[in-house]
Each structure stands twice: as structure tokens, then as C-alpha cells.
Length: 321
Figure 1 (cartoon, rainbow, N blue to C red):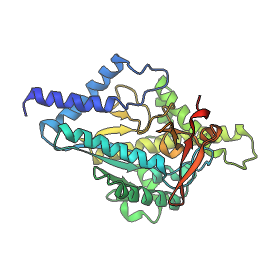
Figure 2 (cartoon, rainbow, N blue to C red):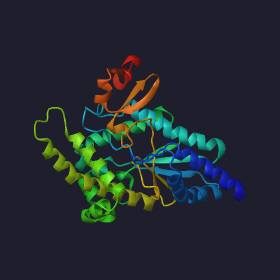
Figure 3 (cartoon, helix red, strand yellow):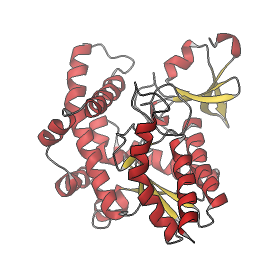
Figure 4 (cartoon, one colour):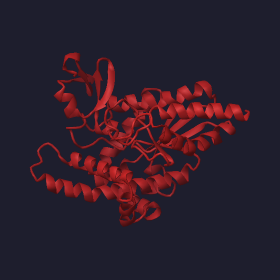
């Protein structure tokens, strides 16, 4: 393949990804300077695969487990939100294959066990969610996707009977101290936004129906856990960088333009931080969008079940402003 062709294909693939890029709130959608910086970081990594005529490898830390808060989600198992997201990721790879025959593959690096104790979801619930994700992959025929989680790491796999030990080994081997991470987060606006977003997730997730304590206590508790979640999440990222050194790194959170990681949306949503496991799929005028369950209910959404299992919401046109 000559250089001009390599460049053309690489730019096409980058354009494919940029269409779905998650941006930090407050940035305009068509920020050309931002996209130029993203291109400088990502193009060489894409080019390396094309030049060698290799299948593109992506890693995406995602699909940990459902939020425990039923104001945000329908239940504890994957539903239409996950189904549509997996179909989207698979179709992204299929589209790349149309003009680059070796194609593309995304490894979903499920991080539920990485911080299960901090998000207060049991390891059994995480295992159940992850088995259902694998079933979904088969069901939708997502041949371009595979799953990798903490129990698949060489040297850690023999400890899957003790996830607390697994988490400790991950932190010992791949994490920086929480104090160092806190300092890094406080250095710029984007670090602060990440810290606030994770704090907000944890705070909302602990506002469980029936909770009668103070919101201030929940807020304080969420702030304390947020740094630990980011510490573990970054440790998982360090481990993945070691396991998949050449892979293009996708993320479910907005990322700075110069980051090796690139944030990606898997479903239309107005919230740049919302994910399928923190929300529900709502069919609005024939198009699925991602929102929190309580918002779908406020729009008089009707809960739809598929084969007896609650799946998504249907919102009829009159209620939609």
C-alpha cells in the first residue's frame, strides 16, 4: 500500500471516530483546533496498523455493571441501552471494514470488578451482568467485539475467588497513590470535571429509594470514594496499555484533546457523561436516546418489556417538547 493510500484510509478511520467523540461540556461541537490536536495524537497509531495491513485493535474500558440506583436504570442486567451500544460498536468496525479489508476489532475491557467495592455493587452482581453482556454479544452477532476483564489477566486469573485480593494486586502493581492522583486532578479544568463527574455518579448512585439520611453525608462519602474510583480506573488503564500496547484507546468519558484516550458516544444523548449502565434507552419518535430513568418517567414514558424482561421506554410524541 503506498503512502498516499495509507494516509487516505487513516484519515477516513479517524473521521469515523471523530463523529462520535465525547467532548467536555462547554466545548463547541466543531472545534477545529481540538480536532487537529486529536488527529496529531491518533493518526500515527492508526497509520501503524494500516502500514502493516493489520486489523485495527481498539480497547474500550466499559460495561462494568448497572448503577444500583433504580432512579437511573431499569434493573441490574443489561437491557436495550447495552444492546444498542454493542450493536453500534460492532457496526463501527463493520463500516471500517468496507474500505479497509483487514477490518477492526474492539476489546471491551470490563472494569466492574476493578472498583466494585467502591461503587457498592457485589462481585456476584458484576459477574451476572458480565455473563449477560457476553450472551448479548452472541445474540446480536457482534463478531468484531470481544471481552477482557480482571479475571483474564495472566497472573491474576487464579485469584478470581477473592476479588478484594485481585483489586489489591491491581493497585499494588499499577496504581499511583491517591494523593498523587488528587494533585493531578486539581491541576486543570478537565481533571476537575472528571473528579466532579465521578463524584456526581457516586452521589446519585447512593441516593437510593428509601434513603433517609442527609444529602451532605452522601456528598462527603461520594467525594471520598471518587478519588479511589479514578485511581483504580487509571490503574486498569495502565494494565491495559501494557497488555495491548499498540491498541487505540477509546473511553466512555470525555478526554482532553492531547490524551492517548479518545472519548466515544455509543448512543445519542444530551449528557456527555451519561453511559448505558447509568441510564435507559428511550424510543422518542422512532429514535433511541439515552437518558436517566426518572427523566423518561417524567416524560410519561411507557416501560416496554421484551420476552417478559423490562427493556426500554417508549415516549409518545405529545410529551416531547
